[in-house]
Length: 589
Ligand code: ARG
Image (cartoon, rainbow, N blue to C red; front, side, top):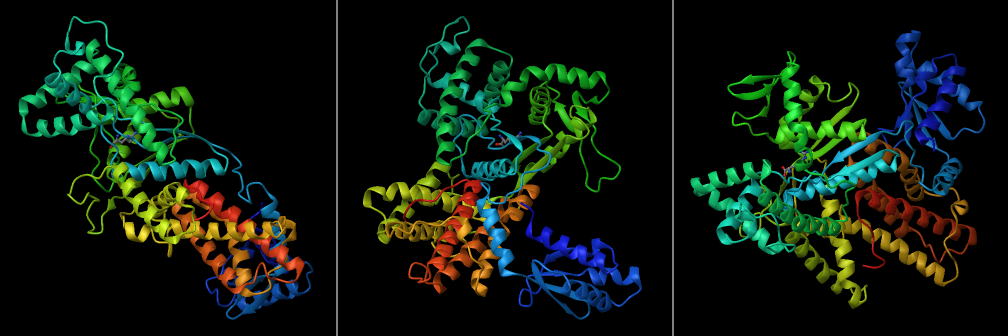
């Protein structure tokens, strides 16, 4: 579908041309003065200099042409000093909505040149419980993935597990103390038990205990570093134990992500690219891209035009160990080799901005990516508590993601039971849906790069700019349509939509007409918050229409059918939008 604004611009361009002016002046945009008009064209102002004419004269010339033109999609007025103010004609608007609504993707335009994109998001660390810090990566990443797919890109989501660091060495060390007789610690053993020596609950207790001890016990820390080193160098018992840690932890991560309705195409991790590292370091050294510095291997990435200091990217420490940067560089190498993407997008905490800048510059300098491969870091801000500090449990500890979800589901269940619109048996399931919407919408409605306050009370409210409010609107529509069906007046097809008859109705039409544009722009800007802003507006427009209109009682058959069709389109647009945001609506709530 063409955007409404493109259609208006074309027709306005024709008029400028016929009046003897450059058609590019006919560019139309959304009005700055919604009280006066819906769209405007400022071309006459732009043309004044070029044509040495007063803007108002140009505007009048264009008006004269418009007045003699038939079948225009708008009515225009010319106001001083030379604006052309436009209102879309109701007939045209209705036919536009009928066309959008008849398309399967409701007017979302597919990109001309689909890109192959790898989306790196999630980034959980194996054996550490998911905490609220991982919520944003998962929620924003999932939505960006769905958004890019909705406009036709070919996207692979990769969870990029942190599965190779010190945390594994810490667990090995702690386990070696607690259960020294396990075969994993026997250097002569070569066979390993089928069953893991811990449950997920135990594993999740072991890591924090080990981590805490390593901070106060130097010798213990040394041991953990050694264990990490031995693991990375292939000690068979440690490798076997690592596999068990992976098995248990990855299954648990999968369950957590499933609960968030987040899914990955690739479950690769830092460990997968370790085989590339020795060759990579050798190659970068041989080609003079990397240089030795105090025993470490570094790549200079500063550029003369840098305004901020840009330290070199360290790719090997003086003790020979690879770093986070090394792994990310090797991962890009592997991704280019296996998938040859046009773009790699990272949805990671914005505090890692410097890291990504260094990595991106290194791979460019080394020619690991093609000159036109785009590398993008979508850095997100911190999720804070109501005190404005990073979100914590009541006791002040790090909040586990699962506890946070439990708490909100609990709260939602109470609310939904109180509302009594849902059968008692269904309350829990409904609460889960609404809770997920509350959490995701609460996050996504903020621009990703900004810090935001996670306010449970606000996010779970059925009123205001919240997920539950959007769901409530959808449920309201569903219930009207269900009633209509009961009365044997099934929702009509889009073809039944008649022109809007008043301002409230027209506002709803205009917002619906904007859907394709908003999705296109949100995809371009990697900005799910644009979709939230849009569906909030649409819900408000719809609810106003609902309160002012007698829908089922409408006596004219044609009008009632038109209303029902309009409801059905609104529902589809809202559901498509929340699907992209990553949640769904219940039947009742
Ligand atoms: N595991 C990392 C962390 O918890 C995030 C990984 C992000 N992705 C990446 N390719 N570096 O901070």
